[in-house]
Length: 101
Image 1: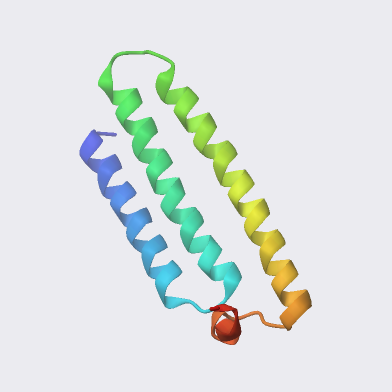
Image 2: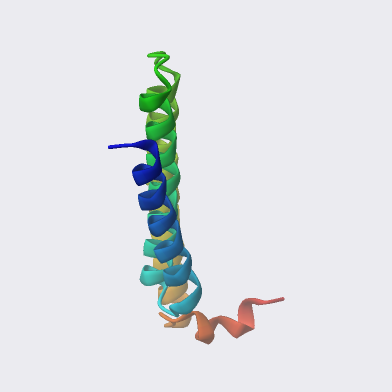
């Protein structure tokens, strides 16, 4: 695969993730959109690392760090969603208008 092909795939992932994060009202779908965007960023980092020809392990290390941050972010996000659902019985973002202040 060429770098242009990979970057088009990255752009598609980020675009679909952005659309999913902005258009959905469910917390789970919102987090899935954010996850798609992070996957696109991670794919871009791996593509630049693999096709740069340097062969240094910094790209792999960056990818592992991003994967760890993604796992922590998803665990924290789902814990917050579960806490909000238990407290307010709200599973949509519209139902949380009382949390603004």
